[in-house]
Amino acid sequence: MDYRDTRADRLLLQLAKTEGMLDIIQSTIQPLAGYDQQRQMDLIGTFSAYNHYQGNVSQTARALNLHRQSLLYRLRKIESLTGLSLIDPDDLFLLELCVRTYRMGAAEYDDI
Image 1 (cartoon, rainbow, N blue to C red):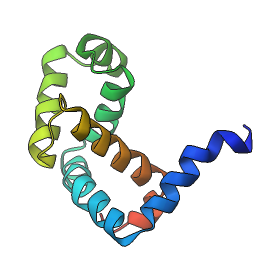
Image 2 (image 1 turned 90 degrees about the horizontal axis):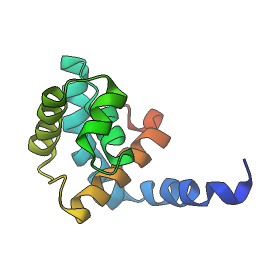
Image 3 (image 1 turned 90 degrees about the vertical axis):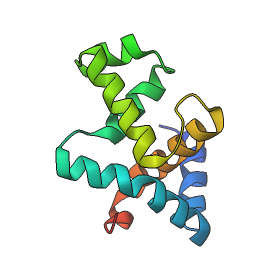
Image 4 (image 1 turned 45 degrees about the horizontal axis):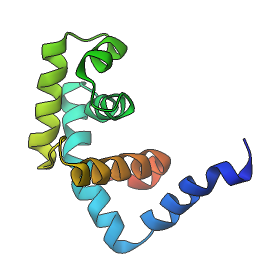
């Protein structure tokens, strides 16, 4: 890996250190992380896979080895817990930004 390849990650880490961004990350991720911890469902991983496959439910379900209806349930649960829409590009961007910064600095978000 080249140092230039980490530019986006370095930017996200710097952004995540700001107080306002930390609040946004925590308020967005906390409901998902709490639900994941209680129900062992991995909604954060589900969202990452869904976003990786660009919203293709069939491909995401296959990749996660889930029934399509189970995946749709998880996606609706993500929307209800975060108050974000997975069909709104701005909401998708915000959720992806929060998930990526959370994963990169998960140790710093132990209280989530």
